[in-house]
Length: 180
Image 1 (spheres, helix red, strand yellow):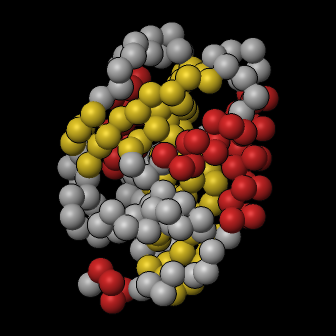
Image 2 (spheres, one colour):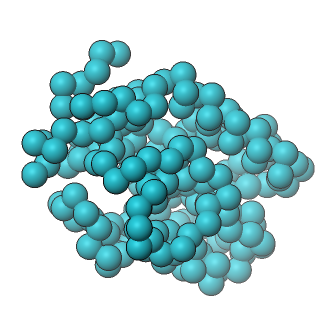
């Protein structure tokens, strides 16, 4: 696929993404050998990463989804997390991996892990596709990180701006003129 004209730079291409997702899948396979895992995908951004990650895990994997919002229509997080769709299953005693597209402030992920741990799972880990290296983050330690990035506005591979660009097979920096 050709670079979208609204993308100023490709940070991670399809091959790099596929290789890193396979590595994370192998790590999860090794860690949870013989145990069931429930992947909880955070909609909508994590759907592509979660699908690829699930196929890279050799083991018993189940899915559930949550939809949360902390952005609304803005390019920056509001700092207020709203649960729009909760998980459908009981996770008590289960190995849970929260699958997220990106961690920037850490606020949403801290909220979600506390919220899910209150339901009594055996474990709660985080697999995040991208982690932003920015100051003043709430400390969140994902067990699995795909890639690191700066404070640019990132799109592709599930990440969007105003519902667009999720289908790009790479991670790219969105031109500021699009969102400012």
